[in-house]
Length: 278
Image (cartoon, rainbow, N blue to C red; front, side):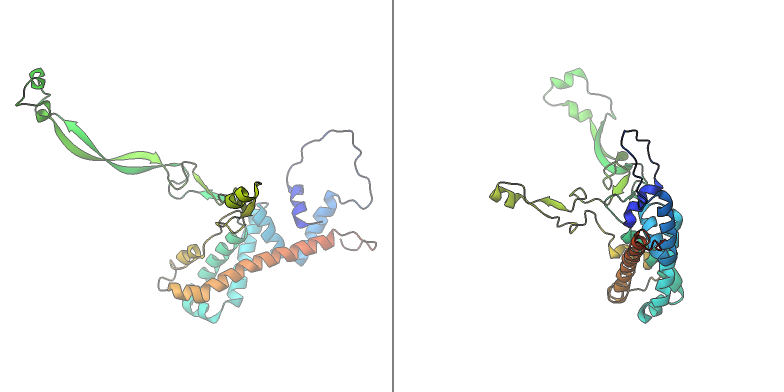
């Protein structure tokens, strides 16, 4: 049984009434077996299980534990160049890297965040310059329309007025949230129009924007901007040479931890003849 299948035991189940007979096999996995397997997996791969549950949104506590564990690991294995550049802000920088690495690991097509431009309201303001007419000498009399020497526009005065008017937020298009889903709809594939016209049947290709992931990843420059708030002298070349590979290594550690937890969960739910896995 895969670890992803355990997520359904954390959501309420609706009552389904039918005439089918419930499985009574002695080897079937019950909810108690799944909970016991999760406990066994927690003892064998605590970090991977906490990272997976935090990624799935099951528990915020597990997400915090995963970030803290990742930060402690970063403090232990950080390269010397990173330690030297961070100086007295080393612990804070490792926590920031752990937070961004976990955010990159847990990112999916369903990930969304509040728009920072409009603070989730979907509305913002913009500056607009308009021309308005005024009549400082009163409006033109009726005979001005019949005169050739005097025109009604002689009584008008045009001025440019700058105003702040409400507008729809351009960043989120008025939704208030920004989704990580790519233009391919999270599928990772788009229609190849040229190949479709040549073959006469729909042909799909990997989305060039997201690389087949279905969502946009967190750019490493976002982590760099967060780090330079604590280390203003950190040059971008130093970040690219020393910090960025270490940041990508932290992301890989999260994926490896999830793989280890999945393997431990499958071993715990694999009922063999000895029945000693749980």
